[in-house]
Image (cartoon, one colour):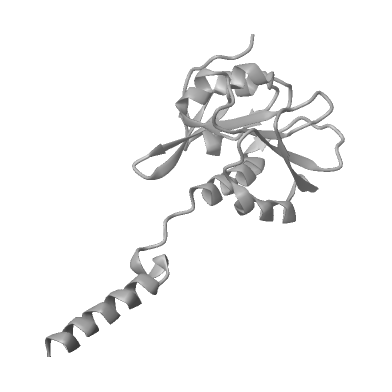
Length: 176
């Protein structure tokens, strides 16, 4: 009887080990899908000065934490322009980015990303201190936005009052 009981316990354990992890725990929130959604929604609440471009360019500079989760954004449009993603190690003078997401480990001051008509977005409050415009800050498992309004306005971008209602405005470095 003990052998049968032991055999049943071992069989149950083997079955549990064979189950995919999604059965054992609730699925984690994909933080970077949410952030990709924010990047797209910025096009609804921030206005760029009118220039003629064939595409609305979103550039990911440095480490790309989004992976494939941001790729569907290329099926959308912004200002009647198709959205185009660029994954770059650095931004050259020839490359125009409407939105530049600066990956962790890239210092915003050293990128020279203080171009007119370019929104810079990055991670954590340190990004704002380095001259970034919008930082994704994680608090209590929620993604919050901090905005360096002075730097954003200096770049020629205009921000909607609706977006200003839901962000934390902070002071930070801005290339003067």
